[in-house]
Image 1 (spheres, rainbow, N blue to C red):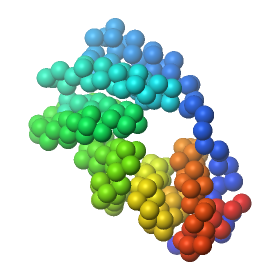
Image 2: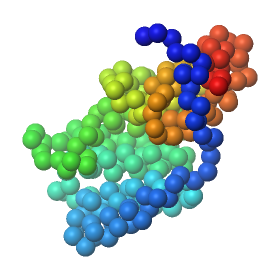
Image 3: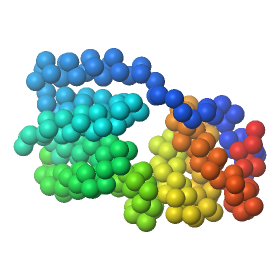
Length: 240
């Protein structure tokens, strides 16, 4: 692939990081919770609670963990394996953001057990059928990155992203940002810069601002290392 020029490599529309995520989804989430409760659908109700926990993380981490635990409490013996895995991995993420190492690991183990015990030809809801071992490995790597455990995060993220298609540009860009962050935490500045560059290239032309919100602060942390070739190249390409 030809090298991108500086302006094309990094979108000029990158937003500044920070601030609470948009609350536009909150009324819809509340509505979905109400419908799930009225329909006595434990799976959908648990999923709605898990989304609520994710939204709560920016305001009250402990409250988010409590809501995520409540989502897992909706699990019953008849809950499909991918739903169980999805709820447990979201609990793991809430615990990781709150710095709860042991609880993060327990939730990740529970998510893995859910996939391990899936029965052949077990029906799965459309909204959770995408949860597989690759997805779980990515979440595992993100959690260990958040907990500042780069020696755990790097191998699992590298393995999972090696199987992840570039066609899913937005998501792969986001996940590469956690790999870059893990390398940066480990003091591997050159590798961090290389993965930020890859993520930025994938993010080019993507409408979502989330990759920019992840990558911009990483570039800020890399600026003091401008004497390193990979960092200098990244900064040159990011200039607009």
